[in-house]
Length: 180
Image (cartoon, rainbow, N blue to C red; front, side):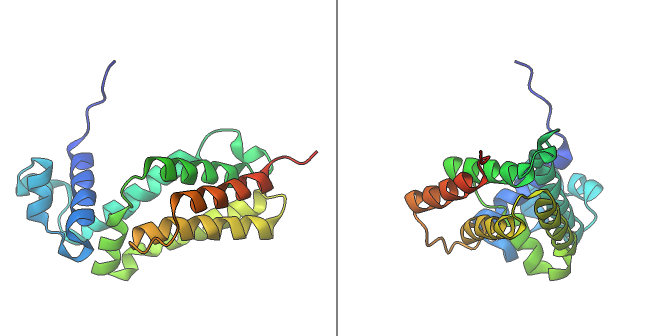
């Protein structure tokens, strides 16, 4: 099996994400990111001229990964296909228990304005979900419920156990099942 070579830029972004999760969003340093990625600080500065630029790239990377996961061709043509794709992602995250995207918190801690592109992306994504939904109000509720589940983990205030989380997601999945 051929493994794709990970670019230095991607190594730096993954290292920053890991460090933000480990040390806290406000304690991310360029030196630590470079060391974690096995890159000189000059190598880091070649890709990201400042901490702000690194954080902005982390937000952009998060949005790109989310868009790639949601971008399966043909899905959005089916009613509730966009929401169903998002539900698949959230269910997979719940099964795998990946670390939450701490880079978002790091960007928020540094400068809340860095999340403006993500705010626009989320508004557009919700509009896309609602436009594709058989029941736009239910689609908005499902979107909010899934964001709530994800954001509780991000903020480390998860009040829901795995069984309850699975129950909620199964309930949403049943409501999205084709009627007929």
